[in-house]
Image (tube, rainbow, N blue to C red; front, side, top):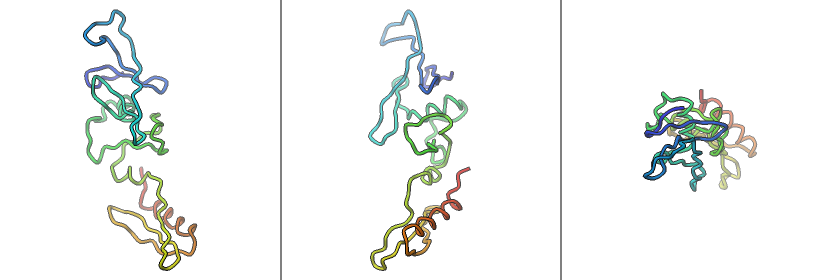
Length: 158
């Protein structure tokens, strides 16, 4: 159990719960834990309201398990990544702190395209903000494999 935005919160059986002592202006006779279900945004991420402030659900889950982590730090070095890329899989085992760049690496990307002028496949990879040319290939599989090999070298997340 930790405190966030002046409220006690906990994570139990895959759900976030908020300690509620009041409802509106009145004090509850029997304070209790209330499930904070939230809602899913258009981009697929779940939001949850805690004491009239909206948070991304996965950030709250990570914070509950790592209370020293700075949940309000929105810098490019403090992203929470879904390892399996499923935005609704908020199990702590699926969450990790990464930089913005590392978060971009964990996306589904082909890494190649069909170049109509020469009728071949061209592979490329983004490294440190620069697009790196990997070559031209006869087959889609060869281009994709070149991208995957470069990704294993350049997009390693510890």
